[in-house]
Amino acid sequence: QKEVEQDPGPLSVPEGAIVSLNCTYSNSAFQYFMWYRQYSRKGPELLMYTYSSGNKEDGRFTAQVDKSSKYISLFIRDSQPSDSATYLCAMSPGYSSASKIIFGSGTRLSIRP
Amino acid sequence: DVKVTQSSRYLVKRTGEKVFLECVQDMDHENMFWYRQDPGLGLRLIYFSYDVKMKEKGDIPEGYSVSREKKERFSLILESASTNQTSMYLCASSPIAGGSQETQYFGPGTRLLVL
Image 1 (cartoon, rainbow over the protein chains, first blue to last red):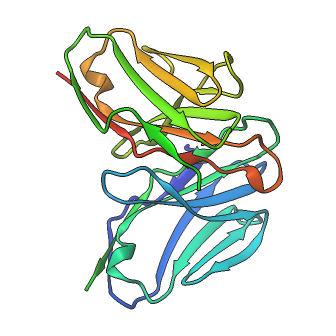
Image 2 (image 1 turned 90 degrees about the vertical axis):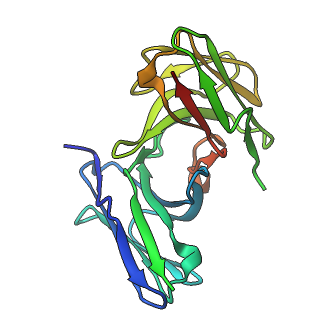
């Protein structure tokens, strides 16, 4: 079983829809949770970052962490064609100077105009 | 803004060739990482370094080596390229861990094709 599971998609939704992207994980030591966005043929870029449980909002994006269920989500409101990308969840325990970040395999998202 | 640059966007090499991939970051980060990214497999860590001249194996180090002679530069070396090393290679850097620093910043990637 992978430490981090993420549905690869592809997920296709119409412009303006609310998008929900999710990851589950098995390691209860994870404390830091991140979402990266990766456009085609580019490197991943950090989108959202949260520590421990709770919600964090940034414009149209909301990251949610439920440590009791080992489940994290990224919500995108009023989705735009420019949101079409692969979204990778990532997490780490963050207790050492070079603690490894474990990435999900990514969900491909397409927003239809 | 953190900037991580990689020496090449696309590379085509022949089986058996020695390949050098270079990565430079301009934010004085302690940690640097090399990943490969393959469809369905996500990002897999090859090697990382948390200081100059220090290196640690990641999950898939076989067939690779690394060099970190200067803080800002981290090189990935394929000693004898093979076709199964055809992949997207991503370099990343991060500041020393702690608090809100626990994130990695990625370069644009090098797409390597080994024939």
